[in-house]
Image: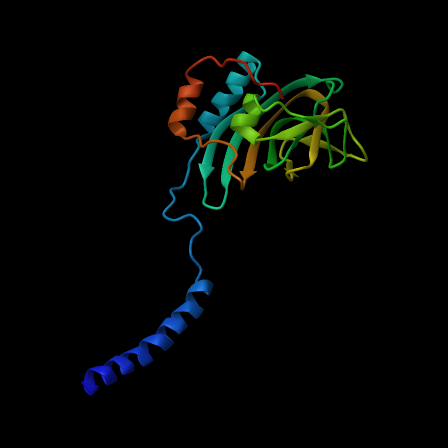
Length: 210
């Protein structure tokens, strides 16, 4: 009876240090944060179709894709804004959870950025842009101590969540690719099939207020 007990004790004496070593190694062993996730390809023809749709139907912001990348979702949007001589009332925008990156494709404009929003008002939760694009946030009438940037084709703008952004002038138009960083995954996913379905039909304007 002593031999099995000795064998068990020996096995435990070997296994315990190995388990302890594994515990020390695993937490520092790099692992993908998105397990076996596919890549996403969006052809320029599809992006151009969104711009054409915006011009034809007088749309502004459109969501092309929303992709789960593990710790966050990433949204890809196309935005087209026409000529603007002066800002519309309460047109400062801010998003609580979603950060944005603009890559200007064509046109030029004056964009004001800042965190101190004047007359902050909650955006209605029924807006399609809130539900499908950039989640809850606020509008306002001005940005106190905001910094104005003259943005043009080729420029990139990074707008953290909580930062107000406000177009105060658009010279003729501005067209830009929008990257939305959505760590709380507040916006629904949108794949290629949904994008093609959207492009194939006229868009209802209900709930599309900026």
